[in-house]
Length: 594
Image 1: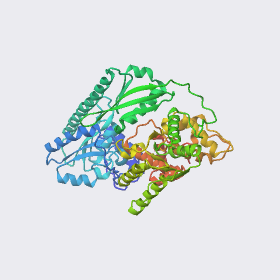
Image 2: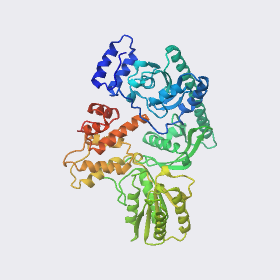
Image 3: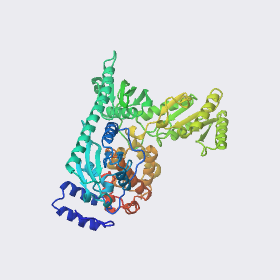
């Protein structure tokens, strides 16, 4: 293949591509890879392989492959060959090489753990092209798109899940010596087959363990509805599948997956369902020696399904002035109100932006009875003087009967300060006359933490994605709030888009979006094309680690630059055309952006 000189422009790269296409020795797979490299605007004259800290070595791929690669490394001692394992994003998870000369060459091009060698970043190469094509490839010498890689010969083979046949990663052999390409590729295929076989064994053991736990739950004296799941498998008995259908089943599975991912939440959880029923889940994590196999849930359904009320133009509001009608939200409000009225110390858990502080303020307005609401957060400094002053202030506030003390974001407290605060609250719990309300995020809370047991009541405020139907109510409420004249409305397609958004910052993010839209000229309907980029990311598309990082960088850039595509593209170092292509890829609808 012709030599691509360093610093070659994109136009010259396209001319070179034409030469590659016309080369009778060029394989279609390599030609297609070069075409993708040009579309990605990879710089052939310089290598840019991003680096990620702490690549995931706890995946089924890594657990299966690393022992095999370690054994292989011992067999290849002193041979000028490097063995590598990458994930499906092209992140190098492991590299083994015992030849010092080859190690120097690999380090020079950053072909090392943590670096990303997908085609999107380094063009045609063994790892990236095997992952992009889903086929075993050998990329040698000038077939590499980037100049710095052309001294290497790389044989890479994709590694697939043994049953689903989805892409998990790749096995790669790299050398700088000339030799039999056929032997190199045969060797790579053999090792990849061993890794897939080991993954099948691990997956089988993992799923057998879950299946055994599931069968034990189903065959107990009073089995009732049973659910078992992990990342790959969902099992439910006939009692559960018949009792929970439609939106209730989707909600139940959604919550169960989140619970299974946090095994410290072992115990019993109550999940309000869209129909108005409550599913009480008794959680039993299923663990094997080397990994978590999933979780088994014994389900008890409480109450009867209620008819779904039609959504009106006027949002539903509780007596506390709060918006929302989903069962999960109403249950959280009712439980919080009961504890607050009784004077019980209350612990509110919930993701950032779900409305914990708004709920406390509403409770105080309705039931404060002249008491003063004092809000405190963690001290800004860990200096002894600052923490002492903060603890003294908390102590003083708690002994004033006319106070309600809100301690916000307790999960941000340092370990030492957390222990000292626990000691203080334990000592004051019997004598304190003020009411204490603590807020924190559930992902930060440990079930065995003494601090979390101080309150007499604990309530979880649901994330917006679990408040089925409330997105529309809240969107309309915020539009009326920021357009008090009542001009304008939200179109059905815009509401559909808003309901599909995952809302990582919850109600706070939704309010920010509607506030921005409300500032535009009044009197016109808000359509889907008017929504900012953050609302137009498909929540159903499964992204690789690198894709998620790239998508988030684009979204942040657009949000910081008032949705200006041209400025964002320039700051990210890509063309406007590439920017639009990436926005379409990630579901960021560009039609209304300038």
